[in-house]
Amino acid sequence: MARVYFWNAEHLSSNADVLAQRRQLLIERAGLNQAAQLRYEASKGVVISPAVTRSMVGGGGITKPKSKSPYDRKVYSADPTVQRQTEREVRRVREFEQLEYQAEVSSRKVETQDWLNNQADPVFYCEVQQGYAGNTSSLRNAVAAGGATLCYWTNIFGGIAEPVGFPVVGTGVAGPPGGPHLVLGSARIPKMAVAGGVNLFFWHAPSGNNGQVVAAMWNFIKANYGGNNILFGDLNAEPGQLMGQGVPLNEIAAPVGPTRISGRTLDYALSDFQPVLVYRAFDQAAPYRQIKRRFGSDHAAMCVRW
Image (tube, rainbow, N blue to C red; front, side, top):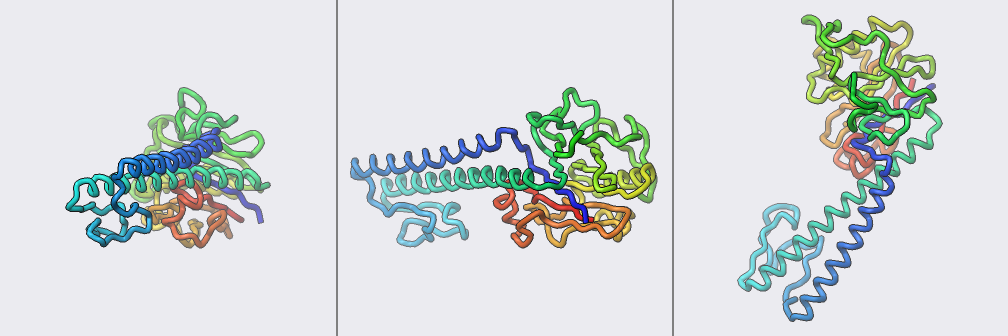
């Protein structure tokens, strides 16, 4: 079986490793600053309450629980000095945790990219910055290649190109039942490559669509390209929405679980031949709420296999 990988990397920078290192340094600096502030308060004799920690669960007259998170709680004390000190400590812990989370995500994004880059199979990225050689814009007639961060990149020699025969501005594309659907030239469009004897159309579809634009694009591909075709990527519509637009169930290759941190399934494939399988590139069993911690993006890295 052949396979390719794809990933909406969400503004992946060519300096991602440097950014990750900088965020790690911010964590270390924040920890040192916190320790220095506590030493200063101790020297003034104002450290008269227990230090606020991540394991703080309330009680002792210091906090009034409002939620499961200790950082969402209001601090109460009859002594204004204790009140101010404890509020400062809560802010420091919250800021430190935010920095730690951001650094963890940045490091994981670099690790995911490194993992993908070490695969022998073709890898497709969207939402990468212009620093990647050979990237191409996801917008027609962009001022520069990769005109914003919404651009495509692949490790396939020769890169990716716009599908031949893609309609110019204003022309209709055969759409789902109910009439034609217009795909304007300024809208995001797929990119095409051929691998494993299959026409591969990689796409970051417009956000907020109800499946109609994806169904229209799929109908266009099937009408204009012979042989075996796969349309895949961040389709920004769920499989059920495509079925509601007339896409047959046997042409939808979706994973068994969510692909985005929101719990939605947006990263999958459509194919006009079987079998085609889609699943997370790794960490298949990770809860969708952990996707960003596991992959460094709101979207999981995915694999298409046929």
